[in-house]
Length: 150
Image 1 (cartoon, rainbow, N blue to C red):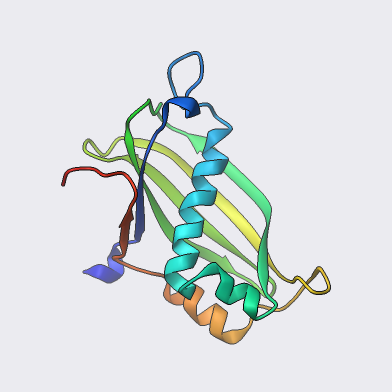
Image 2: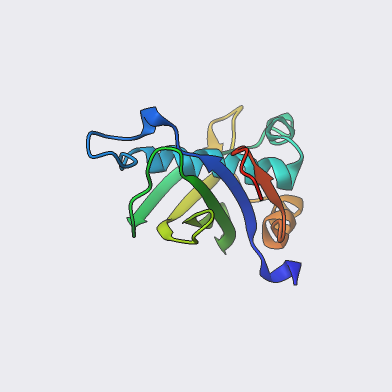
């Protein structure tokens, strides 16, 4: 059932994202969270600019990453995203990263955003229409930038 399947985003590990040990450098996982959430937000709202046009934006206030296994150059990773807590002015997304092909569990992350009004740089209550989209999520959606062969 699609409702049981989270939003998925696939991307390929690039050479420059790896360290001297030949694995993805730990700090790159923040980038991986960011690109994955950008695709998720684009899927939910149609375009990030749509938020900005409403004088709304989101800012990271917390990011926690837990590493489970190494990822290497040219691996295709799949980020799976589900909504976590949706509060008054903030929301949390939970991401899990798996290696496409063998399903190795690479890492997970929780990222919390606060919703702000850019014109005053202050936080605001999550508008109802945004809350509804976050609660619904994008179950079963898959976006790939990896060029993998299914």
